[in-house]
Image (cartoon, rainbow, N blue to C red; front, side):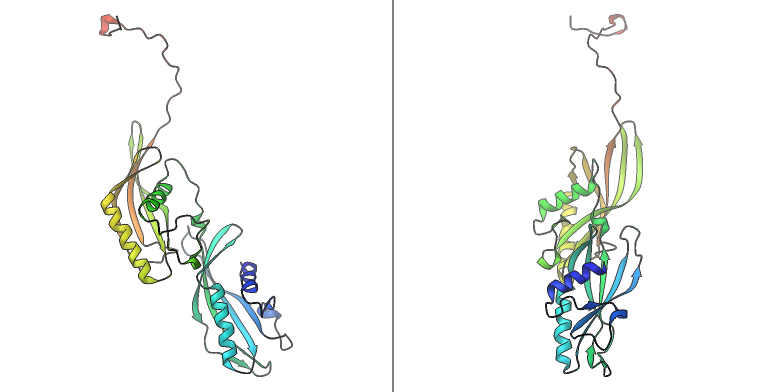
Length: 278
């Protein structure tokens, strides 16, 4: 992850270029300006969402005026905040979380520096393996049908484009009812509404919940229904680790059809009540 962040910063801030270092590599003779990239705490989070990692970036400039460190810090924030990037094929999302404290003046090194905090969310749950019938792909199609302004493809989604996104995942199978033909499955589906502002998240969570109430069901690829049993939406919930929409739904899965030979010349026993064609 460190290398991916470094590549983003190199491309976005030409005046720094490759002058980006780990804390142990800096010293008083290093040319200014430069950035210090430091990994902080790592939160294991939920089992499905993998790790959430804090990183610190310390823009460092020659000790002249604080406006210089302001300018470089703003460029770092613009380069990283609310961006998506991939690490070994797994999508990640990064947000700016403020400073680590006051500006620091190192007189002996003749520099000014400031610590910037960033939180990185591992979005491995976006990369799911579909199955048939698949409630997740069904909800993606339902979303596309009703809300063309929402992105549902994790491969093409880029938060910096300003387009909100809605992603669904199966959190658990909460109940089953075995039937002669297969089973009814009741599942809890989480909807993650990702948008750049709180107001936008609230708007879309409410709009999606209203439509769930209107539709009550959706047809899956095998022409069977996915029935909406109950749902709730909480816009303030974490969009990356919890999801703001919780949907309980039910659908059926069919057992395999026995591999038996077809009847070519059926015979009817008229004594036992069978009837032929004449």
